[in-house]
Image (cartoon, rainbow, N blue to C red):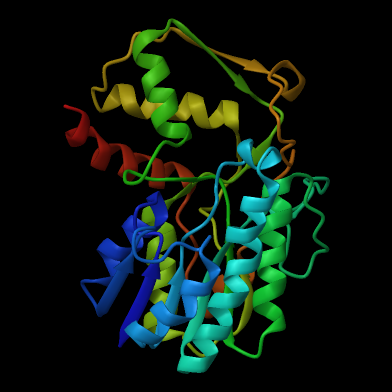
Length: 292
């Protein structure tokens, strides 16, 4: 089986590549080979590679910057997935497209299911929802996999790396405590993707996958510092202070409640997602040697 994997320079794409290439032929592409903002080039790249499966981890992920660059976010996140789906259909390939909790408005107080109405509150979420719609409206064989609060060792920055950097140099860190979600390690997300691609390619439609358990950003930060201290990361931090979203204004509004129900995919895979703190421990253990 040949897999075309996009976004290998990102934190999820790099982890998916590392895992999948031990099991099958993977053609990994970064922006230098497949730039989703260059829409006309997408079909020719797919035709060149002739994949059996396309895993689309590429995305415009700058949530705040999307507020000032909505056209670019829409092109990469909203239009390109549909072009990719049509190219997959022409090759007889399956498309697994990664989406996000930001397609919801965060007004729920129970985990969002795949059938709940979407209502994104920012340009990033709107662009990702547009991409889902484009994929779902094609006749291609496809899976839309939503995840949330993603962090990993590879790729660029993320919340865990930011907290470690701040904790190394500061006595105090102030973190939002009134936004709730499920921190999700790329290692566990990649494992779920590998299971789907290897054993469950026949499934169709929209699914959710995150690590299990719920935390606020404040809870997540406290856990990061506790686990990092146990592993011997250099920290001078003495306290984490909970604050409200209003005390930390950002250009983009974020959902206050981002918990996704994973029951639908759990029924397919036959297993429960690991707790988010287990994923955090594994990520930090893998990250530590790169920082020594």
